[in-house]
Image (cartoon, rainbow, N blue to C red):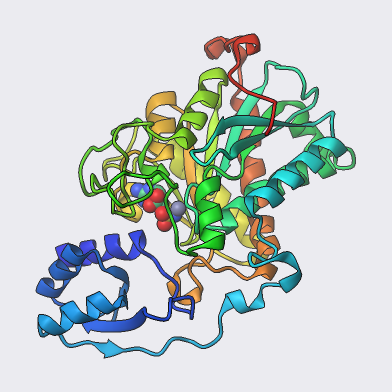
Length: 422
Ligand code: 0X9
Ligand code: ZN
């Protein structure tokens, strides 16, 4: 029984779809009763299992799933979808993605921010995607044109295309730091003593596809040359890559396909290359949803050597976040709290670079509260409650920083960072 629950947990987290009316017309929300044989069959069919609740398994079923259930004599019940949809509240003047940023809207905002704050903001193109989009990094620091000996922290967003809120939080963090630098002494203090790097959109091709073609797209847009598309960027990093087939999949059609080799994808390569010329001391990678702060390891349930330290840091972040809007972010070791993953960003940051690294799964807490669909009005609240955690991490890095304890930073003359843009 435990095994079934574990499998369901894996499925419900890997294939989380919201229960609102964002299903395509031919997809139906159904439930089947929870039985070991049924679960095994669903796994074989690659069905989109949403979650398990009160002995029922919720599935977003395609016509072929219904046919298979019928031919296998598995009874199912049609469930009613809630009629209200958070997407319905998207403002029409901002396009189909409302207040959320598309690739070009993000590009525009980053360049505007740089133009307005040339002393503290610099935009870099750290790599090109398969569809020839730029992967942008925002550097925020005093004397931003210079490479100073300072603490360095990195914030990443949107490895997963459908997690739109994960672009907004790091982008708003960058804006907040830049726009308040001259008036807020506390911001000034941390920006003066650190280099803050923000890559708000690691997966531009995937986001484009999610906005214009298929809202639930998760992976990048790699043509796998077998009729399938996409590699899960959060399974493509080179630490315990492909450790087992539970934490990632060797099958190209899977939503957690790890790619044909570690760092096979330009998006993960660009993060790897940025790390090769910077001495980052801490990392946050934003995802959604679950409202939880996770730290490595993800590939095993065994604790890492920095487990206690990261637990403590996560606890502090969570405590700082709660008073902002009352929302509680749980925290815990990734592999033990959610499900196993291998080749993810944070395992690599800890395993290869030995730095504390966190996945923050932004709200909502579960699928019944909207899943990937946060209302536009909520963007700002979610950013506001995440701000103290981000500032905490920057302060932590400043306190820890001691140039002598770090390997020398490679000369920026050899830097692969490219300033030119298409
Ligand atoms: O599966 C992932 O890559 C992340 N969750 S998401 O729903 N945003 O796709 C979680 C990564 C954290 N690692 C583990 N839970 N092991
Ligand atoms: Zn994610």
